[in-house]
Length: 328
Image (tube, rainbow, N blue to C red):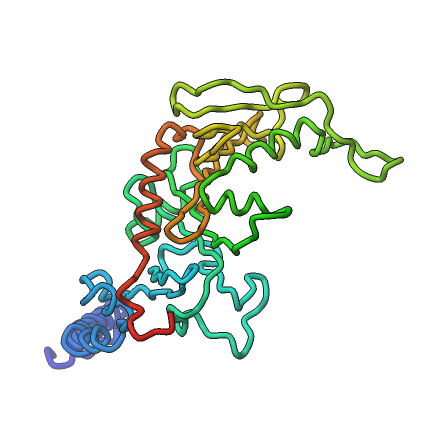
């Protein structure tokens, strides 16, 4: 009787469930042993790109599991290497590949790029204030960055200068290259006063939207929190959220040299829960490049600390020792 009871039990529903659980546990034990003893060491040895080992040595345990690809390029001859989890939007924009065009058959893949590839620009996303990139640990923080109570993430853009001449319509570009944003700032102030921006009203006779009238920038002196000079539009309609309705902040002399130029959303926001943001611009003379980064307007008083951190993380991507034997 006892010999027949076992097979009958296996034929029941509970018996089949128990057998299935036992098989799955056994498979898990075998798979864990194979992973830790054979597969994982092989993946660490052969799966981590050589670029990572060259730049940072042997990867730490977390990176051993999921290696981060390194993207290479040069900005005006300066070699840079950026872990891909720092890159945002389109990442690195190379001069031989349009951002908007599909990659051609002869265009190198991102992993095939070297320090000899000229880059026009790149963009980054990092969390403030620890300047951490996107990782499994920061994924939740990154996803909620647009929430009113979310963490602050800085969107950073770096663009190379193209060597415009000192004369002609691009003379202001040469001034920017030397760290002077005064012409750009004055131009925005003058364009609003001259009616360069338009209203929402359509002009049938002229076939375009009507120009703004009676709106101009009013100088507000020095902002006590940021210690920056500032100005904002005044006149009818400035309570609305529009592209021309920007508060301007700057460090320096409006009629001389301006080293930092900041534009912040002004007027009533369309979505009351949206974050009012600022775009801060400065020049990176070490690379012959301009830098812009975005942050909430409520963080404007921290602009010095943020600028120093942004400069530091950008310059940290430079790799002088990596171009030995290259054509650069």
